[in-house]
Image (cartoon, rainbow, N blue to C red; front, side):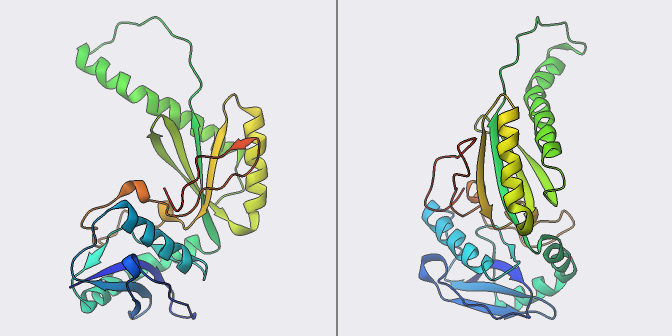
Length: 252
């Protein structure tokens, strides 16, 4: 048997437990300082889209009760004691993360890069290998530059942001937005859409998946990570000026 972990949260509030993946019964496991939500399974759930959607709906329901650190799907441990040990070993990191994301949601922005005028190729120093690597890195460099421009337009309306790279031809950005400034954030996105030469595609609000990790962590890695399901929720249309991605039943 394995224990699938959904989220880490503080132990000081009551919470209604929704169904888990494939209807599994959720349980609370308390550590010395924090608690986590788990479900028991004969083996690690397969990283299929239906299972990931179930997981995302469960995490979204837990998120309605307040700040959580959502786990990647499927992150499993071998016993309840292993869950407690992991929770206690990482409690300092998770308490820092909970404090950082408290009162915040994640918003996603995507846009296509504007067409750049074609320049005449110039000789590259370092031979064909250097030229190949430079050519591969150029789109990400341009994408990051445009992402920084968008982040500057939205400054003071988010707590943190991430450049997620080029995803299926779109520049992908994630913003950790205070719930108290969410309406202002959306309004500023509308303004940015009017002032730029390319439409913005907005999604959210999500649980803060992109901001729920710490490079110092030794937390257990999932048996298999389904990165496409990083933000399980429903994409929403914000305005006529900020275009919305195709709606899905639950998640990216």
